Image (cartoon, rainbow, N blue to C red; front, side, top):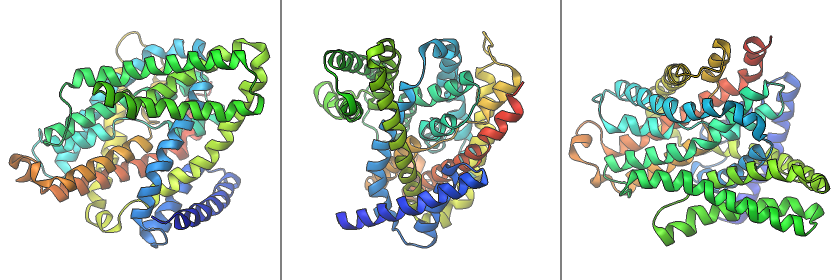
Length: 419
């Protein structure tokens, strides 16, 4: 892809996205759904941006953007508040996640007329069980939603990525395309290894900034460190030990540690403010690019072929699987939330960058190795249909959840959470 084309696309989308977001602000609408719909318009609807170009740019923008959003989101979390909601977060990231995966898988198989235990549906469920901090953090940063509910949902979305990734890898293994040899060790490496890596990076960063005043350079130093931590976890460590550490988990833990430690040093208050201000401004730019390119990356022929079934899967995942999973998980003692708070959590679980990246990975794996898929799976659905249906159903799930849940986040909070 020529860099000049990429620059042209990015300039167009930043300018148009800024106007669209500003119009949405004047109308009292959140910018994320509008940006996603605009991406859909300039991509598959009008063809101004080809899906292949959009996918190539999204692969980079989505990863870098999520690193920044996770860093600033975790940096602004306060441990004293997180401790109060930690039990709920753990229930959401284990019980609720697996129930949501299972129900979404059953719904997918029913809609596409596959056997109930066919792994294709559960692969869709695995891809879409992780919620999205890139959607939630910007929404909550601009609202006065109860901090405990906001942090519950933000922390859930930050820390459920490793489970979603491992579940997806297991789903690929069921199709004969996975590389996992020990899923338990793989999960432990992703979650615990990523956490340790982030803690070590945070402590090193703390020691460095306490010895030297970086002033206005503290912000690029923090972003650069976060990217380096992600690279170490995702690229370097797998080459050394054969298991991947979650780079996203590491970034989140690093941000959480620094946000709660650096604020204890009064002489560093100016630098911590610079980190927050820089990341917040940068996240605005990133948000425009992420969601516009996400909307533009879908392929129109695939959308026409599987759009209706994908929409049904999305409705089932958002309005059936997620609410049931959340209510079951939060019914496990101790019950710390009111019925209205549990309902809000159940109705606020948008999907985004991570499911999009996983769906794209699964699509490329299946299309590159169609003959590897077992015959007992191929007899019900050809490999091309498996890849296309999962990709479109995931896109529809992301689109619908971001548009609806991004739009009603604040109004729903006003109705359910105000005393």
